[in-house]
Amino acid sequence: MRVKGSFTGHERTDHLLFFDFDETYYPHACTQELLEHVYELEEYLEELAREQFIKIIWVTGSGLPEVIQKMERARMTFSPHFIAGNLGTELYEVNKQGQLKSNPSWEKKIRKSGFSGQKIVELERELFHQYGIKLIEQTQFGQKKYKWNYYYFISSETKSRYDLSIIKHLAKINGIGLNINRCNPKAGDPENAFDVDFIPLGTGKSEVVQFMSNYYNVPIRRTTAFGDSGNDIDMLKAVQHGYLVKNATPEAKQLHSNVTASSYAKGIMETLQLIFNFEKARE
Image (cartoon, rainbow, N blue to C red; front, side, top):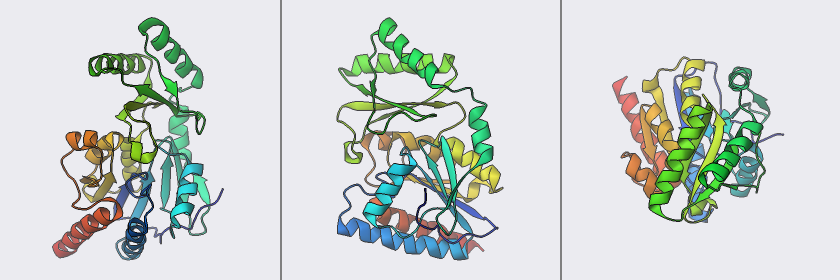
């Protein structure tokens, strides 16, 4: 599998930029105006990569095939230096030729977690037979080895709060990582539902931030992230500069107060310019 070549890379790394992909970096509507902003952002990021020694990481709930398909649809020019797919359960480095290489340290970390599909099947059965909680498989892309996706459909707010607390409790006592966030119809999700994702403990978006920071020995004060939904909040809180884009979901905006002035790539670029111009002025 091959993607577009990455932004310019250096041995030296001074700053890490983390981006959620769907409805943050990549606009599902793909209007001409939104895509023009993506291309302007790409040019600016390439300039930063050359001059400021930054590494760019996409941290996304999508799998690699879906990311590639969306990149082609948007006619993007560059790949990031790393793609952390399926909620950070996969981590690939991308070189200038577009070749992908999985990170062995991250793979080892996941293997040691003891995560298995059988565990998730048993948990799903327990939720249904003992608690009457029904999870619907997200089968459009099939279940992944280290990320099992479900929808939980809302019947009432009271029942939902109770059911989600049971799901969290059972995942915790079974040593399973969990992501729950309100679905975003703009990204192709159904209305009135929650994403429920089971992943290995010690993985996920915020853990990717910690891993990459240690991997490149970059202090947290030199980290920045952008997202749009509830599953991005932990990542945004793990960095120094964490922002929701203006088009973020209402759920996310209730959980995080830093929001860009504009939507999608335009908001990202404006905010990065402020951050890096300030950094330059301090030097």
